[in-house]
Image (cartoon, rainbow, N blue to C red; front, side, top):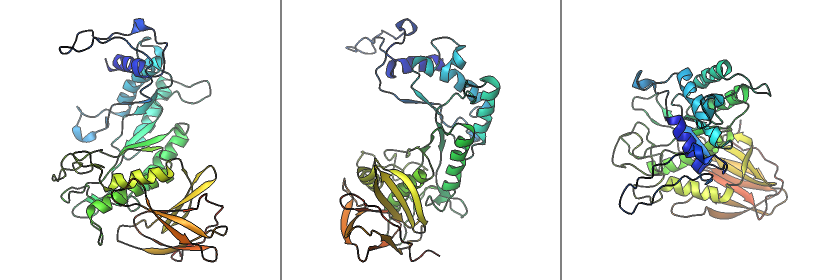
Amino acid sequence: MKRKDRFSVCSRYGRNSNVPLSLLKVSTQPRWTGDPVNTVKVGLALVKYIECGNELDKWWRGANGYMNAYQYTTLLSAFYDGHKGLLGADVGVKNADTTMQVVIGGLASNNPSYIRAMVEWCRQNRGYKADGQINLCWDVINYHFYSRDTSITSPRGAAPEVSNTISVARAFVNFSEKYCNSMPVWVTETGFDINQGSRQKAIAIGDKSASQTQADWSLRSVLTFLREGISSLFFFELNDGNVNSATKYASMGLTDALFKRKLPMDYLFQTSQLMGSFHYNRSLQQMPVIDEYENKGKLIYAVWVADEKGTTIPCSLSFPADDSVIVYRPVSGSDILQTETIAVVNGIVQLTATETPLFVATKPTPANQQYVISKKLR
């Protein structure tokens, strides 16, 4: 049933306006008084991606909640293209819209071995395409990841750089490059609670509250995943379920329960305004982190301390062609980053890196910068 439902959904909301109307049916029964009668529509161009299931590898639910990789890929092959069209013209996403991207249901496992078995199922049951690639039945790899510290008596969230965030991301990206023709890798769940009873809480650090740490770790998660090649990152979830509840995930919202922006949303929105069109270019240093972002020849540097101890580290950047630079810092309650103009002295800008990322660019257009190593690097 799901496979035909998705054909109907993708026909209606996808980009193909040539789907035969004879393949589609809708209920014409009004749902309430005055409800307009539904009609068949195609090619509304409202949906680009569709996900098949969610955490279907949930081993903790037992046999009734777990699908092994072969079982899931059998479902996914029907969902994707009606198992290469064998199930009929009205089955499968791709039969409705070839441009629609099918996303693997977010995996709970932090290991790509599940997808390795999915690839093998496709090799055995879908064969190879004309270009010699295995005929896979998905377009985007997708997993869930919550950065946490489980080595202590009371588990909690952890800064992305001190957990296994990076190693897991690299494993999935490397897997995609090796077995899946470098298809995009998404992380569609991540986040940190602020309720201090949660096992996924952000913690107060020094004079920073848990809410401030949540904002720091959220922004650093975005920057870290970008560096490691993750194409898209989704936070769970938009709004708080119940900030007073110690239940995991209940206080992870980027907004409060009434959709008022919290500090993490401020940080993310402000950073997006500055560098939403930029892409990660290279890393210049690990501690403090100094990453370079580029857009049409313009450069911006992201600088932060990859720790959770309240550490500050002096560092330097070289701007030989400029007399000053603009430093951008996230702030509370604003749509834009706070700016400060700092003089370039003898071609050098002195900075203090903290656990809150800051961003550095020349004014108005970043020139060719030559990086000067941090005093702290050994």
